[in-house]
Image (cartoon, rainbow, N blue to C red; front, top):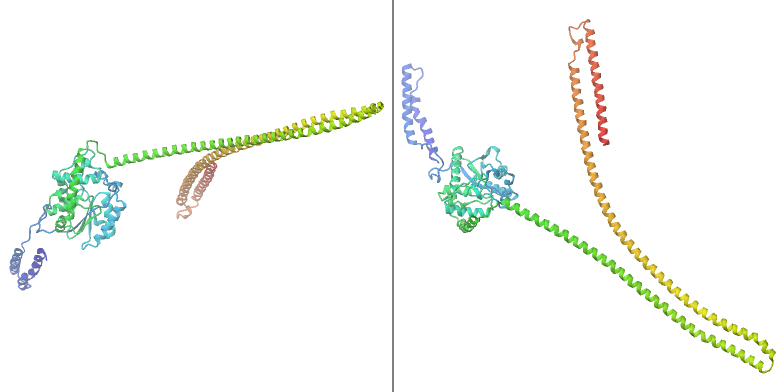
Length: 598
């Protein structure tokens, strides 16, 4: 039991005992002098009874000083603490370090899908803690706000239990090194702090602060002072934007050098349950963490040297990403151009192949034509030779027969002449003339037949050649027509596609224009209806406030004509208003029709 509680219990126990003599000596209906004596006795007795008790308690003096690092081992902490590094953000997922306060509430500083999963895992771990958080304290950044919101929903904490902190929980400003690669900067700043005693990094001109480790410790001292004086007996979860700030807090609690805060630096989404002096000292003694710290020191020596020796203007992660995007865009453009050139080259090759195929087909047709022509010529020549051979073989036979006839005729004439009959010879003269005439006619007919046969064969040959030539010409014309039709079909398809695109664009434009006109007509009709309703409301108000003279108790016959005149005038004004409204409705309908027709 704490000492203060024990002392309070002793006082409450001894106070009634000390007051017993006073209560025992009390008697009613005393005189004033006796009453004064009794009061003196009561005060003296009470003082004598409580003074030793107060002296025995010996309360400790009130302490209103700042929280000290390391804390007084005789004064325990008033609250239970848990610390957490908020989940991964969209910027840190791209390995970008951003400590400029301008970007703390940026949408790029919101949690990534992995950061949300890390927050869910942290809430599960905090639920299993013996002292689950009752208060969540977080700095004003999108990252920590979203983390605190997810944790409060999971831990069933109200909005009054999630408290923002505007100054004391800010992460360390990296100055000129802000916005660079996370891996490069984390190792470089570690070795920089180790060699310079935690001095601030180079300053920047864009508003990014340049903080030392002592600046971070001062803010954390203010934070702990506020928490220890504002709360008591609470379980407080501190959510930080980075993992180094809780490490500095742990180094302060354990009384270690601030440069050793990197040993207990938290990873993204990591939560440290029951953060106190004992757990901090235990974590500083973890051999794996110390080995990892030494390894990062060796890597930081090389990276810091590379960072400081680089005389070229250092680019931020955003600028590097922009350059990379531009490089990718240029590569994509080059690939598109190469693809276009390749397609153009393939198209030219296809056209050349098609042209060569057409030429090859034409050459083959020409060769086939020549071959057929030669065959026709050879066939005609063969037929001609056969006709000549047939003619030559037929002519000697006819001559021999004629000679035999002539010879027989001559022998007959000689026999008649030898017989001495001159008259018979004179008679046979006509027969001899007719035989000679037959012989001459036979020779003439043979020559004419030979000429006829030769002319007919040549005519047939010419006819065959002409038919073959006509057929080849028709084939060439048919192929040219087919190729022309194909080209025309392709051109027509392209024109039809362009026409369809144009019609589609025109229809879309027409549809959008009709939609716009329809909306304008609807807006106009809606405004018209509103104006009509407004006029109707005013008309109803006028009818509701009109004076009914028959309802008055002081109504007289002399006043009736005047009242009737007012009623006639009022009804007339209402008719005029209704007529105007009808005309206005007709006008609006006319305008709506015109808009719809357009």
